[in-house]
Length: 281
Image (tube, rainbow, N blue to C red; front, side):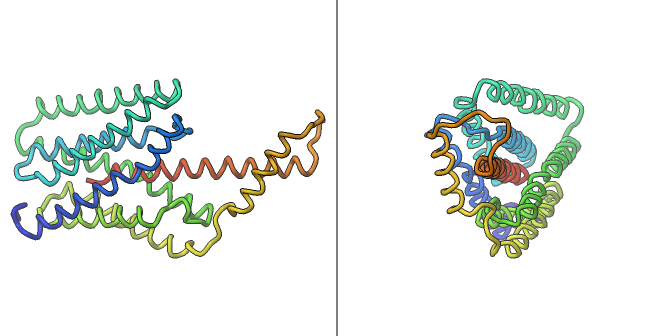
């Protein structure tokens, strides 16, 4: 068996760690905005809770194997970063969202992980425990691949790559490649398998980017700016209550709907991107 002391394995592991750190830090601008506005603005916490659960699983798996310090460092950083994200979210989220986040955090990260920990400890020993936990990690990683599927569907629907940042997709693909090669050289099936799918979806995202990169954005910035001004002007003017809106009001209503749809698409993109982080080792 190839050891992690092999220069090639060590190199891929180090590169995988570096790229994973960059990817883990991708949501930082989102949480800076949350902190400044003192509001979560409708963003969901589920992807961050899922990412934390995934990092906890892989950290436990790595701790059961000898010479897996590179997996341990990557997922330790992941646990710390995701915990900080969730803490910030809980502080600034409205009451309903905060309660929901705490519930799924307790259910998944304490109840779910605790159950896996106890069952694997008492019902399996040695290599059997490693294999069982390895397949649990693989099954969970594969199950959350709805995230890249969701963002690809969004790109195809809107014919716009504004919801799929190129560099994030690139780093996610590079991360999958590094951990895939690490798993193959280490002869670790459980590390390699989920990153095969990660590599495939990463390449598909790059292809979609090349196809749609020259398309116009969903709503032109100038049109948005002008429409917002119209909405402000309308709110400042005196209006009479009537049963049917006139054509100007209908146009403004349509623009409001477009703005709301775009805002929702941005939130889907944020959640999808973070969901992709959770499938990385």
